[in-house]
Amino acid sequence: MSKLAKTKGQKVGGYDVVGTMSDGVRILRPVTKPTHFTRAEIRQTVQKVLAERRRQRELMPAE
Amino acid sequence: MAGGARDVFVNCAFDLHFQPIFRAIIFAVHRSGFQPRCALEVDDSSESRFAKIQNLIEECPFGIHDLSRTEVDGAPPLPRFNMPLELGLFLGAKRFGDEAQRKKRALVLDIEPYRYQRFISDLAGQDIHAHDGNPAHAIEAVVTWLRTQSRLKSVPGGRRVAEEFADFQQVLPSVLAERRLHVEEMTFGDFSDIVSAYLTESGR
Image 1 (cartoon, rainbow over the protein chains, first blue to last red):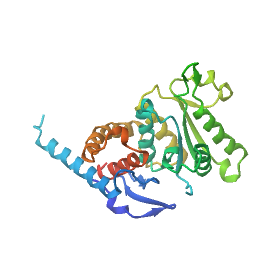
Image 2: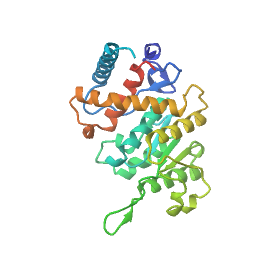
Image 3: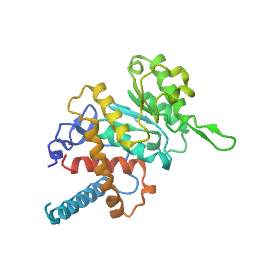
Image 4: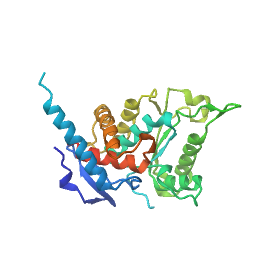
């Protein structure tokens, strides 16, 4: 699963790191703030959508 | 608004027709561990658009220039020339700027090979990549180029990132629906943040 917790909040080369991918790539915090929602709201929404998708996949019969 | 060593200036069209390629490029830049920057990030009407672009170009050591929307429009038909102009500014900064500016690196994309020679023939001989209007091909070009420039072996291959983008495209409508936002209302800031949240939450 996601390894973001390991590097969340770190700074690298002056950039805020929001997480690290399983292959080691560090994802940087975007320079521009979102317009229509907060960053926390976006993260919660993405978590919710991904969790719902996982749940749907688990309900699907195995091929 | 100071730039950093991983800032990538994205010079391309922002219209609806070009959105699939624009979003693919932004996704690829984030996924490669870089910071995409573009004129859409500044919302200050007191500053002219060209001044914003000049500042961005000065701040970004890397530039991705997609010329594919350089095409005739209107009556009489005249070419849209913003992208070649900004490419010229970027190359001029590299040629005539200080030591930091001279380290600039540029990737030039177009929709088909050699088309650019019809409107900027002076660029003939440059290594220009064609993406055929296909977001997956644009991603492959961007990811491969950024991996080469950064020498970061951890950056995955372009095809892998293109697969991730295809998955992201399936998730995006649900995220926007949850936030009750139409896709055309989504700003650059909204999109960038959704991409970074998706990448770090998707468990890849």
